[in-house]
Image 1: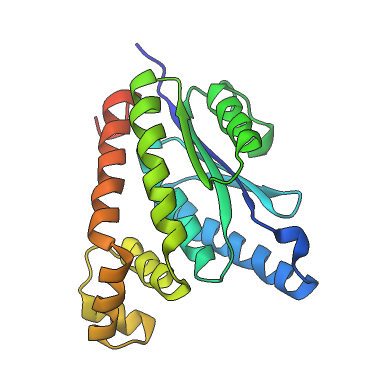
Image 2 (image 1 turned 180 degrees about the vertical axis):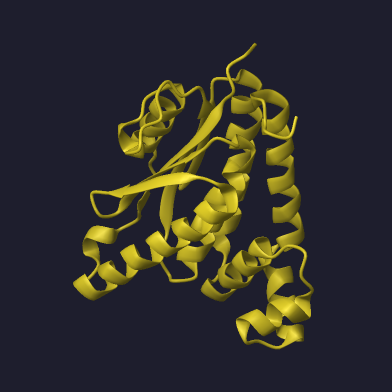
Length: 213
């Protein structure tokens, strides 16, 4: 029987060394809050280390793109951006201290982050087909997320966190009017982003032994 695969996301905050102390502390609080909320929703584990770096492990790897997108959107809404390297592969040892865990997924994710230059999202996998399809198309997701305004990122994050809710319900959550909320959702490309995240989820399930197979 094949070993189930996991997803590892390794990331860091862009330009954090230039932040003033107050903004830096706010950033760390926001990052911790976002990861805590996602841990409750996706049963993930995470560590934040060296101040502005983080690592996330999902034993349900099909949700990796959802999680990485929500991390980025929530920080973009605070006018902060992050680099994230997603890898799907085997994990040899998963320790309580996530960053000291070992395995192919950790190696791939860490190496990719070191190699990243202008891009802010990358993907790799021990499955060649996954690496090809998602490693290529994630560049489009990266470019789109980079084009969003702070408010579009905020509204899209709210929508992805509450996908079954009406635009009116989302507007109430955001303290905005329904018409304005719908306009912002359309500007954020929410239909296309949802379709792409569902596509990535399906592909990872098919090739990596997703939990719902």
